[in-house]
Image 1 (cartoon, rainbow, N blue to C red):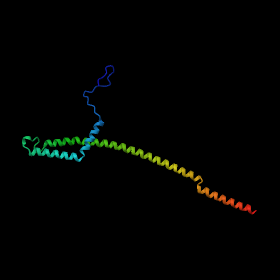
Image 2: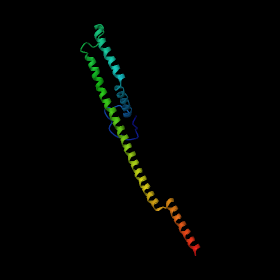
Image 3: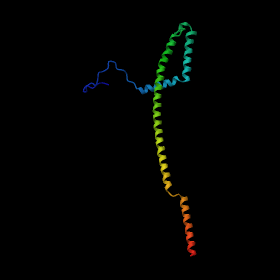
Length: 162
């Protein structure tokens, strides 16, 4: 991006400008690589490559050998692969840890909301039970009405006797 001439410079220009990259895209790529490195397919392919390498450099004529017996170049290639694989795996693990932390925080918040809802409902049920204790139930009303009917019958009988 070119600087505009009608605006002052905001800072000193770096001597060596590093390329910009998307850390999220790099993280996704590292996760894909780490996921592949943890598969049986990778182990099979790595084993096939090493076997072909050793056979090529031991069984074929010495004119086509590119890495003789102590296989120094093979050791270098495997060391280079390991030196790149370890940080990529660690980066993928760190990203997974971040996702796990966010999921745990969300789970904790959900559990707190559930506890608060449960406590609220418990208080509401207790209030309803208290309210029902003060309200006449059907059996209570029925027994009171039966008592009143008996009392009326007794009064009527007493009135008939007089």
